[in-house]
Amino acid sequence: MTRSKSHLCFLLIGAMLLLSLSGQAQGVKKEHSAKKAGYLSLLPGAGQIYNGKWWKVPIIYAGFGGFGYLAYSNYSNYRTYLTAYKIKTGNLEDGVTPSEASLQLAGYYQASQLQSYKESFRRNFELYCIIMAAWYGLNIVDAIVDGHLYTYDIDDDLSFTIDPCLKPIEPPYLPTAQYAQVGLSFNLNLK
Image (tube, rainbow, N blue to C red; front, side, top):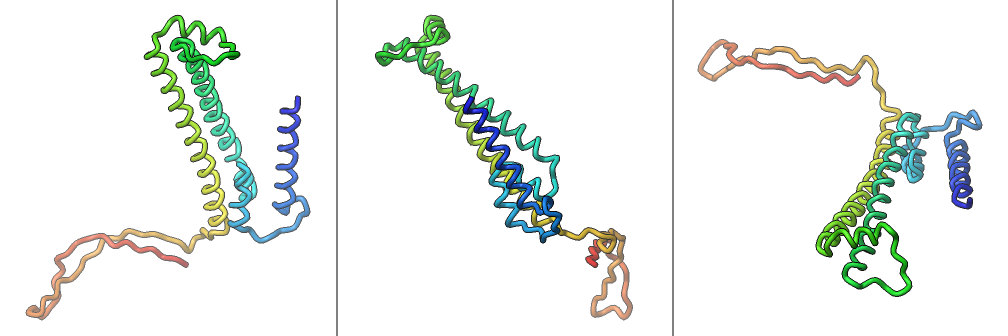
């Protein structure tokens, strides 16, 4: 019950923060700031909303949900195999009641197999935690880059052309130029 209340409070506070900082609630057009987008991205998805990239928010939260589920699943399996390993080796602490799954695993596998599986699940858990941290960092970098490119002007004055060209060879001993080099010319016009 309290968990759902805390999630609801988190969502309400985040929504109020986004509405107040975006300037859309007051109808005021404020100057766009990449720094503000970076700060807002500390709350996953808020920087993308500030930059007007609403479609990225479900992708961000799907990534957190998927990697979070995989981390939780591997941690849960790690705890189960750890308990089974302790049962098999006789190192289970007094007062700890093992689960039915741990008892079944201890009866089915040898200690070396349990240790191998346990370490594999621990390694995968740590890997998914690192991936989630990288996903969070990617969220921040994306918001900052989008914030910097928010006012980038792309108009018809920008052009890139590739043309064939002939370059003359003018050695000092020839009175006239001779065209002997063939190539491509790359031209980039900025405004």
